[in-house]
Length: 248
Image (cartoon, rainbow, N blue to C red; front, side, top):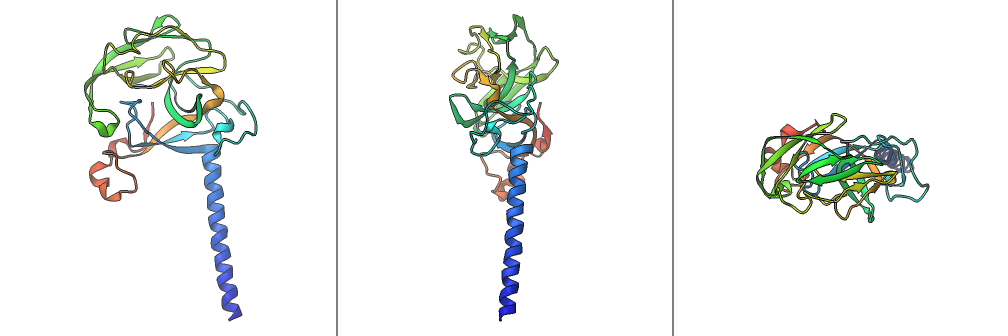
């Protein structure tokens, strides 16, 4: 009997050891390499849709307290810092409530002057090149109900191009004051220009320390507000064309 008990205890100990090692490995990967992130709203349409699941690289901008689970107050600033590039899609902690994650595009770097004039983004007094490339429609499962919204292809001064929506040509955020981005901060905007809470509004300038990481790839995408766990909905709701798509 004692031999059977010892074998059971040994098997349990080995199983527990494997589980602990797996949890530690997952913690290391999530803290230092990649963090999964799901899109909660339609503010980044048409680039990102509700139901998209992304890998966010934690090492892209280095590490701050917000890079780690529970945001331990171990140090201030960043270590092994890497500067964000204009056009990056970045996950960050909301300056007014650091418990909340946001995802937007970096359009303004420290020292930049940013302004919207008649729906056109201006950086340092120069209009960003944009051209209409089509239209976009979506039901509410994408985050917002949109019908034939004009899609504009923007090209930033560094050559990064991406699509934006202009649902309402006379929205409150189509004409803004000029924003001067402070040192150590960034100006963030959603690609869905008329339905995005971003640096033009209450989000304000985002401190470098608040950046969590850079969006790299869509690894899963499902529509109709379905959960990835609802496997029976995969045949009809899985967006196969978006799987493993590199974000831009």
